[in-house]
Length: 119
Image 1 (cartoon, rainbow, N blue to C red):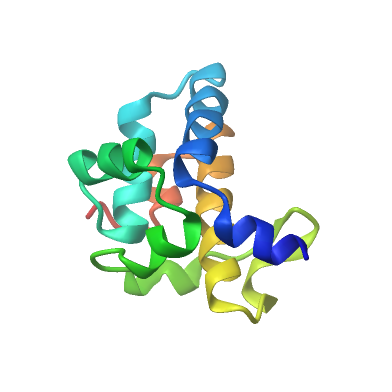
Image 2 (image 1 turned 60 degrees about the vertical axis):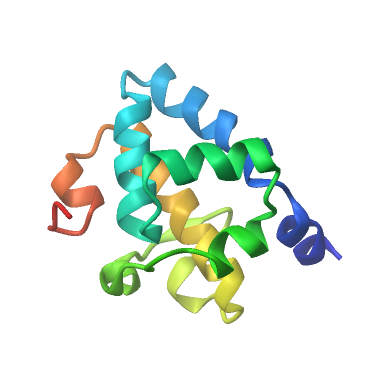
């Protein structure tokens, strides 16, 4: 099942694609860190450890220090699915992260990507 495969995918396998995507569009890895930190509460050192340790996406989100309470404001379509309609909590979190990275790469202002907050 595709969902199981995604759950077991290493965060470190996805992260370089995020970096490439945002840098190709003129954004920085630091901005990417800001977005992921906003969503999950991880700091840069913890993100680097997650990549180096091969943590899977399920564990990455299960161990997230503090999912942002404003994450529920992330709406729209990603991979052909409306984010707000995804029932599986883990898949919704993964798609939230995908959506934020897409918005960053598309050049949206950081305040907009972070749903009007800067923390």
